[in-house]
Image: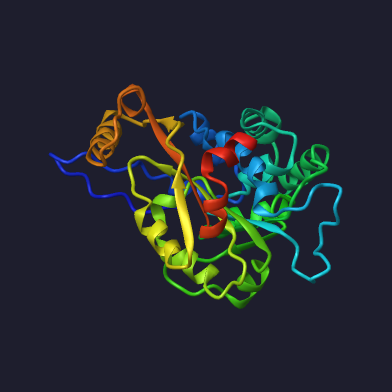
Length: 301
């Protein structure tokens, strides 16, 4: 997802640099070119974390039947919010690394292809690397071209270009997410409020887990408080942070250091050393959170 950049003034550092245009292209080559130059790496960190959360979140083992059980529940799915081109789905369900995806999409061979040819190339590329324990992934993003590519390339089992910050979910989206057991967010928490989650989760008998990598320059309080009203508990992993990307310029770094310091965190060794950093937040039904503290879930994974 994207957002408008605050107006630059002479005495106020800008907010984060906008990358709106890389989500409006018909394929992800500009995405990987622009973000690769800045060392963007959050999906890499999320890859192993999200995979480790699947069993405790209620996904069946690879040997079990993946399409519901005796109680006729819908298949367990992952909902990736702010999914862009389906990058998290690519990493979750395939034997690939983020570094390999950067190489794949910035290669001379990729540069010679039309979008239609790239889609066909990708369908083969990912089919050859599909994990036996792959899980269905539904994508949600306001960027329609990115969602369309994720679906066409076979990364997203379903995808919706909808903005739940301004409108209610379509009936199709609400139905498709009935079986969601895990909601993932790696690049959009700064642009979301509790509204998006409330519209998806209100009235659901079984609440999914929500795993979000959140920039330290922003606050997750609104979302956590909104989910608390639905009987869910949010825990922040205080044991570590995760580098996100390098700053585009000194002004952006000044903004980050100022914002992190204002939030009561220490930018030393993190933002002060040249990278945005994120922290993992995990939200679960209160009873499940009480039964298994966050550190034990991550340790087991």
